[in-house]
Image 1 (cartoon, one colour):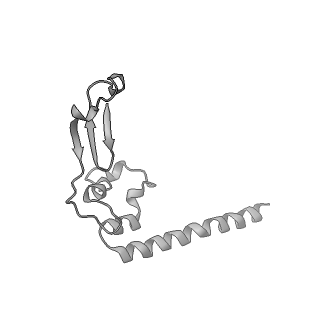
Image 2 (cartoon, helix red, strand yellow):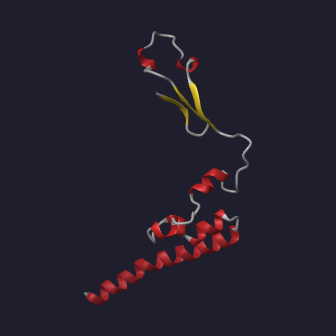
Image 3 (cartoon, one colour):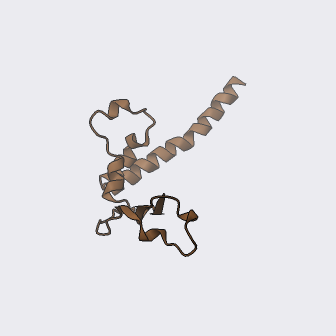
Amino acid sequence: MLVGKWDEAVYYVLGDPTTEPKGYDPMTEAVLLWERDKSVTKTRYNLTPFAISLNELTPGLLEKLPPTDSRLRPDQRHLENGEYELANSEKLRLEQLQRQVPACLSLIGDAIS
């Protein structure tokens, strides 16, 4: 059985601790599997270097990703590279385009009717 907190530490306990007598502490036999490195510095949005690495576009991955994959978003790339102003301006540009889509669809629908 796995016990712990996803953002602190994860332990493995052999067997089912719920079948043990009352007062049994499963942590006495727990094996540490993973523990957060508390010395890791975080970025502006509390992302650890590990979290940022999960979005990294490794060689060979790009041609396997669909065009809608969030790792391909320009604002996301700027954010992960620490280019906060570029990320924000790109995000605002994309949001503006997304707001225009319903209006365009409405015009098209009116033209078809």
